Amino acid sequence: MENKTKKPARLGLGNGCPYYKKCGGCHLQNMTYKEQLKYKQIKCIKLLGKFCRVKEVIGMEEPTHYRCKVQAAFSKDKTGIISGVYQSSTHKIVPIDSCLIEDSKADEIIVTIRKLLKSFKLKPFDENAMTGFLRHVLIRKGYYTGQIMVVLVTGSSVFPSKRSFINALLQRHPEITTIVQNVNNKFTSLVLGEQNITLYGEGYIEDTIFNKVFRISPRSFYQVNPVMTTVLYGKALEYMELSGTETVIDAYCGTGTIGMLASDTAGKVIGVELNADAVRDAKFNAKQNGIENIEFYTADAGDFMVDMAKAGERADVVIMDPPRAGSDERFMSSVVTLSPKRVVYVSCNPETLARDLRYFIKNGYNVKKIQPVDMFPHTSHIESVVLLTRK
Ligand code: SAH
Image 1 (spheres, protein in one colour):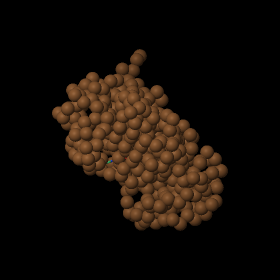
Image 2: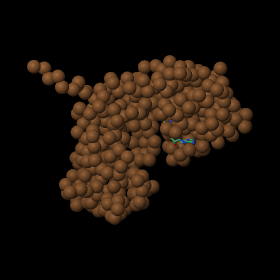
Image 3: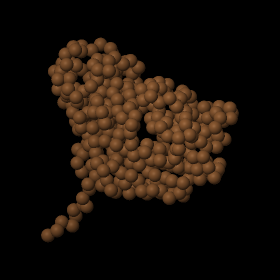
Image 4: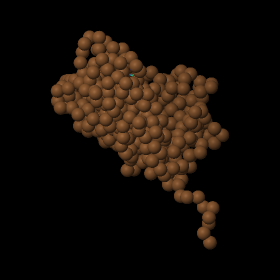
């Protein structure tokens, strides 16, 4: 007889992820990937559908192991040394050996490091006593280059048996291209400290997006899902509709990735970003790629735009990619004054995006296209690219 109480099959990660309940990082794991995309589509339509038709969300073909930046916290419990992620909204570590959204090689390296700690009699860091050795491991992988950076975050610069530890790690994982010790001796929930000591290789990795090479240092901001980054940036470039002569402002530019990709088909690109480290990387990356029609400024995007508007400067296209909190009226009112033909808004939060689109609509712009892109499968996050044109 058929079992009538049997629940419908759940094909999301929840089915295969042993950490699902404890971790809490992937909010939508109980849904199949198809259901997740539908959920995100409906969310975008609810928030943005009043402005313009929302295109079908672009999902991943293989929505697993997409994170090329993996972080693990280290600690000790009654079973010995543990490594894993902080439980959602807490500071409790959920021990994890292999995560379905993280790069598998990165996870393997983290397990190796945990085993090596034991054989080298090195202790994980104790945040309360501020003693011990290893706090976190950060791994970044260049998806297209295959380069791998291992960052060992330690509580002090002292590294007992450093050479033998590094050799043992490289022997087990010859695919590692660089190893950095990052010293974080502060009482803080931030993962990385200020000081980086390169122990092996160059101290950074490189990856490519389309035809450009980007340097990724331990502290640089770089999108974590390389496959979908090309989709997202591809849409942003398409919506900019550049013909080779335009002046483009890349606001909230991070390490300048979008602006540099746009530089091939623009007259001139101006990047503005608050974080000085990111701007340093952006300038370096521009030079490395031989891009001459781009300039970067360290400033608040709002202040910068106000100054540009006051100076009577012009811009044909503004591309903006603010953090989750969205933009502000200072910035947007100056965009309106500069009066570019097109504004391309890349957003990681449809709520603040809706608020900001309302401002642009009230002040002379039409929303022409809205394209959601699933950069973070299994989580509730959804990215969107929006094209606005001057009325
Ligand atoms: N466009 C980049 C980075 C987007 S992340 C990329 O795709 O890689 C958002 C960026 O906005 C971060 O680099 C952050 O440092 C920057 N930021 C946050 N507030 C800012 C502000 N008020 N002015 C300028 N940049 C800001």
